[in-house]
Image (cartoon, rainbow, N blue to C red; front, top):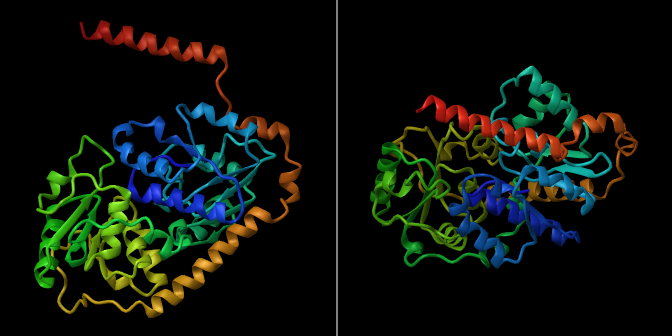
Length: 381
């Protein structure tokens, strides 16, 4: 299931899709990004998925998801912040999937680990109990789900790590000069980040090649960063190529860090509390690389910080956890379903499963919209 248009989200979905294919599964990607207002920004990402010949089913309306029960035996919610309470409600807890369908969560994230509201807690706890297997992307989420939702889970690596470096390199198309450049990928440009990029560029005596988030057309991140060498709209092949071939990499993106690790590039990341610090910390502490993360407002490299990195120990830890994560996914797909799920309670399922609106409900929706328009015109005469 894919819901948003940025480099990390698309490559996460792509990696999980290819991993499931290698496991012998027939896969389709439910594309919920059609339901938001990102259609222009999605163009570059859809071109990539079309080019790679993925089977994609566009979900123009959230209610259409229910009909997917007629076509699939298993539903899997992928990684990234799909369980963030601020996103699409309970959709990514597979509320549309019928009780008899196998449900798997591979590495979702909630971004925040504070206690949810009682109403949210009651509903999501019941939906989580319908899952056959649950894994999460951050170590802190294991305790969070157990403490607040009474749910057991396993900590796994982001799906991008399930796709090998060699497989990613086949997709990489670096821009001219990327190999001698300090490459950056900045989601949220600020003046301090701008100064930091210039500082590292000066220390390494290398030009800057910058990539920015293109998700929201109303925000011109290229202008906000205001640096020479900033690409207007990098394709996913550009994005992968520039990171894989760079002299040094700087980012405030979690998936930027993931790909720096995959390609064994020296890097510095900038804390991004707005988008969730926990995922950075969980990954970097696992690899004993906590010192590679700078505070949110850092505008220069601290004295004594090494710009070089030795990946020998890092790769050993990564390899072990990648193998464990891949095995977890294989087991989740093949193990016998728990008896409690095989004999689910149909009356309970009727209350939990999202269904398309009836004709009467659609008429009520249209009526409310019409009344709202009339009221707006009367008030603003």
